[in-house]
Figure (cartoon, rainbow, N blue to C red):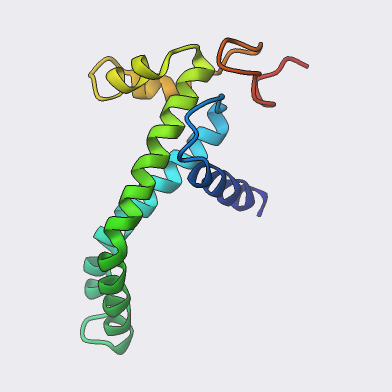
Length: 140
């Protein structure tokens, strides 16, 4: 239950801060956000096919497909909001590792393994030029 609470808290925090690419984001919060957004983006694409396989010609599938149609109509707005919040999270996570926003944006889509670095490397334990360290990075 604590895990689910942390996921929802991190998702809401990052979506609400989509316009604020300043400060730092710890690796744990970034992982929660990244995995949740990935699930939210892929689920409406995969779910209708799976439901049709599991429940062919059922009332449940018809209701789910109607809900999926409504979601797809609203999907563009959700995708734009998620893209903004994803870039904000990328930039803030790069700040936690000591990289500038320009470096983060230009290296994210390269084959340099930068995405893996964002997901796996611990952040700097002390304050840097981008702000104080997140609580999870601080030395005890």
